[in-house]
Image (cartoon, rainbow, N blue to C red; front, side):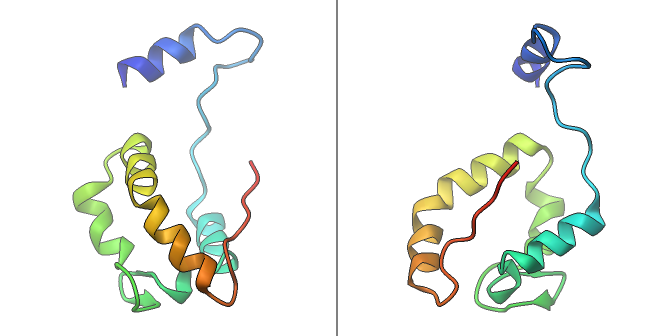
Length: 95
């Protein structure tokens, strides 16, 4: 958190800092479904059964955006390989 604060306070040319604004959980749910996450993952039992229930894991493991990003990064190669073999392939994300 100290590193993020350092970067935020020293960002140049960005009005109001460089950290993202809080997200909207309703929009997040729509993206989760639209990108096909529900084919494998569920949130508290709603969704796929082929991978972890991310809602159950969230309260214990995801305390910050950094922890979520590191978890995704660490599992990336395995998940991407499985997604590449699926019918829908790897989803595309833009900012």
